[in-house]
Image (cartoon, one colour):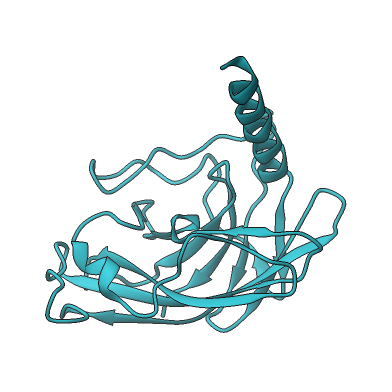
Length: 199
């Protein structure tokens, strides 16, 4: 039993180190989360701001317009993947006849493309994305109505092989009056690497 646990612990340590050293760069301006992180908000839909594990100030994430691409790099600057949020649309109706209506009043469906430009598999998951309101509220994928799972094609959980690309929809249950929101891309530690502005 000790052998498998040691292997799992070792893999988690590698993932944490890799996740801590990734960066998202691109054409966007350096801006984003206010100093000290976003403010706390309503329970049930939000999470507390994450702190940098080393006690150093968290770097401001890159900010992109819809359709712009950010490149995830490792600690040496080697490119790992390109991430693009190409579209984001609000809808007050469920995506299909089997889905529940939005709990908060609307769905925000974001079309995301991830291209693995590195030399090894790149982990992809819809939980890598969240919506951030201007005042700091954070909406994670999967919270609210089950209708968020009805948008096609959904972005799945996978290890994207080197050279491969995947496009899918990540949907969120949001306030229909959302203005100035951002779709954030996070690393494995919860650190925001980049945000796309929602018009």
